[in-house]
Image (cartoon, rainbow, N blue to C red; front, side):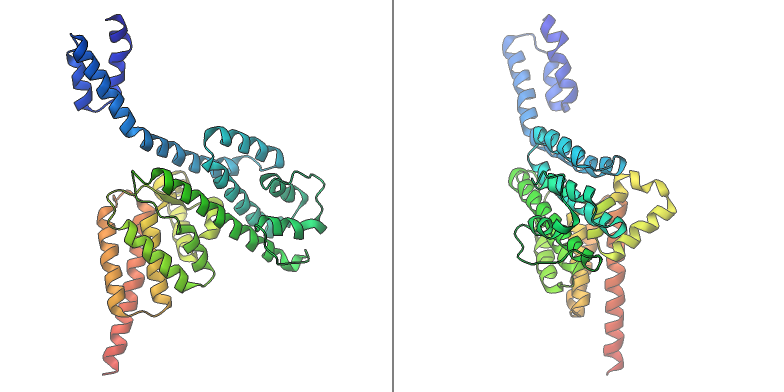
Length: 337
């Protein structure tokens, strides 16, 4: 009884009422065994979601810490070593963050030795003697076997940046595939959200529309969705200019927004709806198709809590764009009568 009172009775304090109530009477061995079994079963049923929450916390922590501490080859070794102890998924995610960080820095300070050492570390090329003349080899390695050749000059820095962003998207997609494989039983997760963002940013609206529409169909009616996309730091380079402007306006209104999840996270379904609608507008789809998109937007607005500020603002922006297009097309059709 000492053991039960000192230890076992503390476990149900974290459990729902249907489980903790069993400990109100453990006067017999059988009652105690049933109560403890209920705790174990509840813990097993929630363990996967707890793991997901820990992984999400790490997703947020990595880019935030990157913005606080400078990224060097030495710090990359530390990060990759420690992350490997936590979860193998996070290595792909961290590599993507590094690629986006370097892509962000190159236009400002050039492709320095320090940045090349950082890339060499995360890609397995531990060579502190890399020179600018070897950037071609490094850029091709980062691009996972790209056969393109380039002479490293100020004029083609944008080419290196593009390779880094492309490689970052590939690693983020790999990370999504890991998530879908292991956490699919508890929530709907799509794996092409970053690919769709990349396609839209590069004007491939047909491909973006196909992926985004498939993602909307998967997520819209799902019982549970958990996955979000970060909308701050290096990830801003992947986002559409209108969403970036929207986020900037929230910072103007409240500079502390960057520290609140509701202002820096956007759900996969909201992002997919935005990209789908944007592509439909770019490709001049019919009013009927846009009207259906409005129904999807309204449904998602009702489903998302009001405190999901960035989601609600993005959905409102998407709705406004669709309504403006429908009004213009309707007026044009009326004037042609």
